[in-house]
Length: 286
Image 1 (cartoon, rainbow, N blue to C red):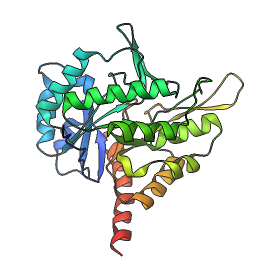
Image 2 (cartoon, rainbow, N blue to C red; image 1 turned 180 degrees about the vertical axis):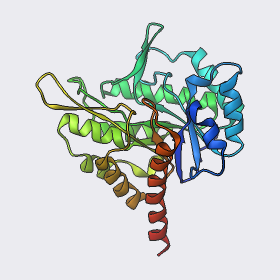
Image 3 (cartoon, helix red, strand yellow; image 1 turned 60 degrees about the horizontal axis):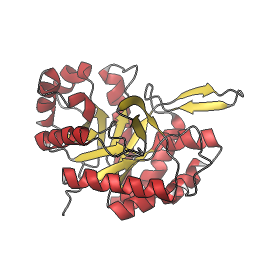
Image 4 (cartoon, helix red, strand yellow; image 1 turned 90 degrees about the horizontal axis):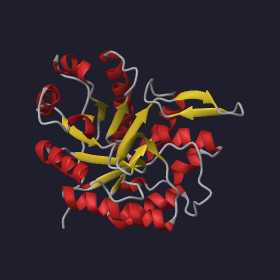
């Protein structure tokens, strides 16, 4: 079966929030695409779909799933997957993505993206789940690297090897969340530059940038939380620039899902990402 590949434009996009609808339509905006969470658009109609139809007339669409529970030990929820398929058929997005995580158990949705051990058994199960998703949707899926706060003693495969092998065996692409890289590295005392130096960048179909909170764990040590509730931090911008210098322009999303700011604040973040992409284009052309 031939899968439709991810094909977002190599510009800056934003996660759509209903309070920004009028602002987005009020003239030309410096964004290349919009992204939505699939689970917010599984109803039959109403204002969400009215907004989305209008936006899709102007911008490419990325659909980002948060509920398929790709890493679950249980089989995928076929009903949920059918609803994702219907949404993709309805809007024909340029890209569909999900997380390397699990979020449901025994029919209960846990409203969180939880980590999984990196073992051969888990790898094989994730590959099988991605195969089912891609076959059902008839399109390539992008798999996002996680933000993590603990390491499983059971893990026997390094995360980068785990991701690369899943992509190779399933044919999926990867979604590189740079903030997740920084969060995980700081929490585990590793080097985010080393992680990105080894990341299979040739498989990346989209990049995410977002904010994080700085808290403390039970011992008083710093703990970064992937909160999506603030502007992109300076270290994340620095890592992003290093990635784009190596890859050239890639579709880049600004994620801001909590404490959502007014449109000018969000679009300023998108402009900053677009500036990085434009510099990469000029370098390539030189």
